[in-house]
Image 1 (cartoon, rainbow, N blue to C red):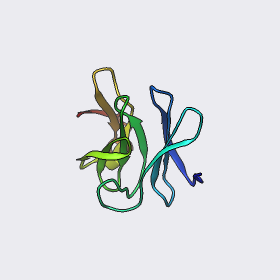
Image 2 (cartoon, helix red, strand yellow):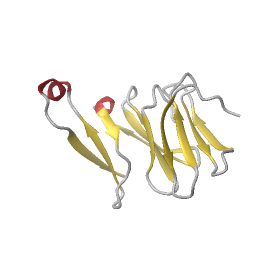
Image 3 (cartoon, rainbow, N blue to C red):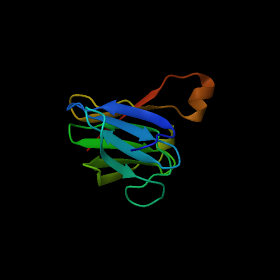
Length: 130
């Protein structure tokens, strides 16, 4: 069993599994089967590989890969079956929001700089390809 503390994001995978990002003190990502049972739990607080300082978003890259946004660490982390595959450092990750993936495998993100928010300018779009 898992007691969710602060659900910050979620996603439904192509195979029917549901992914939930718990941004509470546990800082974990929980993968539930289509019947609602816990399949995989990964993450946790920290600065090491596979750990998070904050979780702001989770989305699927493809049917087997999850992407977790950790803006306090300034990185995106890719996981397969609960195992860390790759970290990507993004200097301005704290200002980006994951939008999901597109058909070509690009992970679109949107963000605003502080000055743009103050001046009312539109979002800047970014793309990241594995």
